[in-house]
Each structure stands twice: as C-alpha cells, then as structure tokens.
Length: 223
Image (cartoon, rainbow, N blue to C red; front, side, top):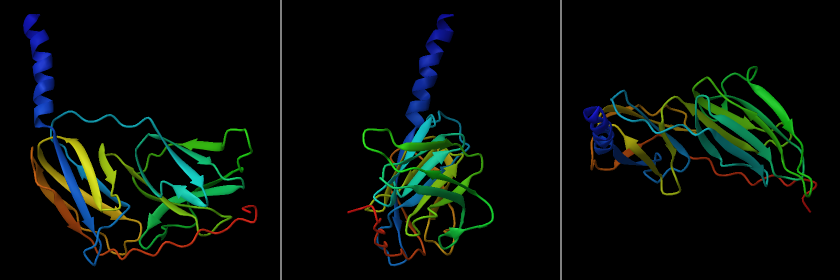
C-alpha cells in the first residue's frame, strides 16, 4: 500500500520532469513575422496531456470576428455571440487554399440578432467533430472574415503580432509540427522534431503573402 502511495507522486513527477516548452516563430514569404498562423504539434510520446478547454467564445464585434483566428479541440463547445447592435450571420464551412470555402454548397449558417441595450447578446453554441480549418463569414457583411481551426491535438496555438506561438507541457520524444494560415496558397510542409527540455526556439518559413486587412464595413446603424 505504501509503495503504491509513493509511486503515484513519483510517476507524476516523472511526467512533469519530461514536459517541455517550445517557442515557434512563424515567418511569411519575405521573412517577416506572420500573425494569426495556427501552430499544431502532434505527438504520440507517453506523458501527461493538458486538458482541453470545455468552451471557447468567438464574438462578432465592430464588424469583425474576435478573435480573428481561434483554435479548438474536437468536442470543445464553441459559442458565437453578436455584440453589435445590428444582425449578423455566422456562415461556416471547411476552408480551402486562398481563403475560400472548400465546398460552398456545404457548411452551416445561422443568424444572430443585434444586441439590445441592457440585454445579453444573442448567442449560438455548437461543437465540431471534423478536424481542419473553418472559414467564418457573414451573409450580410461581406468584409467579415474569421477562422476557426479544429484539431485533435492538445498542443495548438495562434501566433501573435511578433509571429510567436508558445506550446507548453510537451512530452519528450519524436513529434511533428504543422503550421497553417488562412491566406496560404501552398501548404507549409510539416516538420519532424524531437522534443526535449531546454530545446531552442524553432523558426518556420512559409510562402504566405498576408493580405492587407480590409476596412470594416460601416453599418447603416453605426452613427
């Protein structure tokens, strides 16, 4: 009994000792930092896995999806909320190269009423079983565009303004690193690597030429 009690914390300590952190720097085709790139690490090495988030929220605010790019695991509940004072749609479907719907005849759509003063925003919740990038749009406002990346890996992040994505609690051992961006025309080849404590940051060069952000459409109600 004593041996079993001692082995449990020792096992947990062993897992934590092998856990590693990794910084990934994503670059565009000109070698500049690339924002809003999804970085996913795939590993079958033994070790503890960080728990999946039970729920994430994507808002429609000031004619934009916020955040512009989100990551969720399979089965995570995704709540869409409209914080604007006018109606929006959420039109979603698998994203193809170049920021278009892979199959425009497939996907889903629902309408969210504009928020009224003193009342909670209109919301809709759904979960996903298929991995890959989802393109988000609005039937009413063509400039609105966002992405939701669904993965079955517990290690995924979105790069910031500096092109940096941080992955934590990685098990030591062989792994594969994938990078995806909503503006990519050519898929970035996955990289194989060996995770270890104290490993150096990794730079990933892509062929992405980011599109200039379009000015948000002005609603007729926004005066």
